[in-house]
Image (cartoon, rainbow, N blue to C red):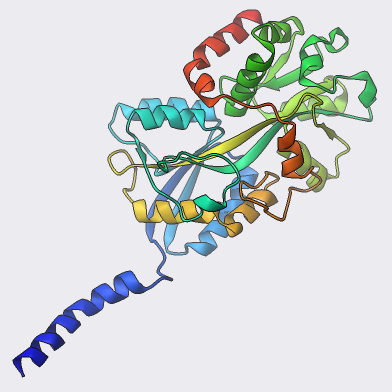
Length: 338
C-alpha cells in the first residue's frame, strides 16, 4: 500500500513537467527583438506570417542598413547589453566578428540539413535569405547592347562615366560585400576604376531607381529584389541585367545573441524563430519578399527571377574572412579614389 501511495504522489508531481515538456505544439511567449537590414516593406510581409506562427510572442523588428546596425551595436556594447535577441544582417562577415567577441549563442537548428548554402558548423549563424547584386537599366532610355552587361565594364567602360551608381558601402553590407568580391576578382584597380568612372553614391534604393527611370543614370548596381519588387508591384519596365561575369550572391545571416548580451534573454523563442525562418514556411515568406531561398531544391523563385541554381552557377564568390578582416582597407581605398 505504501508503494502505491508513493507512486501516486510521484506521478502527481510529474504531471506539470509532462505537460510542460511533452507538448510539441507549445509556442514560445514573451518578447523578441530582431535587428534586421531587410527593407521595411519586406519586414511587414515576414512579420505578419511570423506573428501568426507565434501569437504569444511579441516580436519587434528594428530596421537599419548593416553599417548602421553595426554602429548601433558598437554603441550598445558599452552598456554590457544589446537591444536585440536576433540579428539578421546583410552578410555573414559581421557574424565572424560577433562570434570572436563571444556575443552569439550557438544553436544547431533542426533545419540545418535542408540548407543549400554554408553555415557555421557550431551553429553561430545560418544563411536565411539570398540577395543577388546585379545591374539594372531602363530599356526606354537605353538599349541593352549599348551599356555595360558585366561588372567589369560597369567600372571600365568610359561611355557610362558619371551615369552609374551604387549604394554607399559604409552603410550597405551587400555593397561592401560586392566590392570585396570584385576586389578579389579584379584587384584594387577595380575600386580605382569606379572612382575614375565618377560613380554616384546613393544612401537608399529609391534615389537610384528614380534616376534610372528619368535617364540620369544609364546603369546601376543594385540588389535584384529591388527591381523584381518594382516590376511586380508597379509594373515597371526597369530590367535586371545578370552580369556576364556573374552576379554576386550574398547569403544574409541570422544569428542569436546569447543570454549575456541579449535584450530579453529568451533563447527558447529565438531558437524557435530561427527554425521557422529556415523552414519551408519561413522561406516562402522570404521568396514572397523577392529574395531567394536558402533551402535545397526549394520549389519557388522570386517573381520574374532566374532560378537560384542558374544564378549561383555563374556567381562571383565572396571571401567572408577577407570581407571581415580587410573591411576598413577596402572602404578606405574606395573612398580615396572617389
